[in-house]
Amino acid sequence: MLRAILFDFNGVLVDDEPLHLELFQRVLSEEGMSLSKEDYYEKYLGFDDRDCFTSVLESAGEPADIGRVMRLITRKSAYYSEAIHQQGFPFFAGALELVREAAEAGLMLGIVSGALRDEVEGALDQAGVRGVFKLIITAEDVKESKPDPEGYRLGLESLSSRPPLPGRLVHPHEVLVIEDSPAGLEAARSQSLTTLGVAQTYPAKKLAIADAVVGSLATVTLRRLRELYGGVGGSGF
Image 1 (spheres, rainbow, N blue to C red):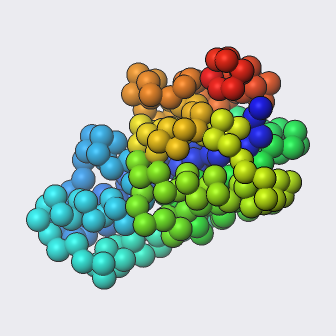
Image 2 (cartoon, helix red, strand yellow; image 1 turned 120 degrees about the horizontal axis):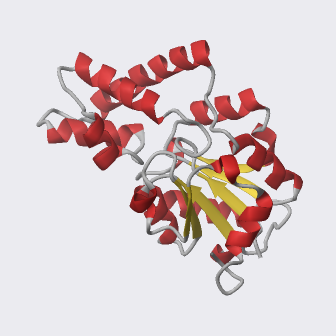
């Protein structure tokens, strides 16, 4: 039985991956380095800011001490806040409708993301849906970014400790994860979670490890999710 949905944030709810790439490129160019679109989507998408900057610096043979990395993260965060202040958070078509429908149906909702907490909460506040999410796991809560499973492990633990099921273990087969990247899907599947890949960032063929794949959330309703979820053996896709 489907009891909870854990959403990724960037690339699933909010269409800001192109903005993140632009800002990574801007900050790195100020440091005398470059980052191609191809490398970003092939190597770094799914990483949080810390791991992305660290990996790019190390690949370029540059110092990647924590002090430098944190300065780059702070600068990128400031640029992001400036851009969002001007433009607002760009939600994908259908994303907020699905969130609201699932919440009204009594499902527990959470976010497991490599984004910064201020960014996630700012977007949810803008859309007026912050209160429907029982848990939010962000970059500040984990030591390693996806595909490391830490975020989803914390998500499962948090679901079991919150109403309406305090003290009742939430089993992985009761939770659906919605992700847009191979790294995110790998992290979720390593915790035996059922996965839905959304081809809003990568082409569907790149998301083949998901239990099911859809082109976008624009055509996904809760009824459709339940149909997909019960599609194999009644306990998963």
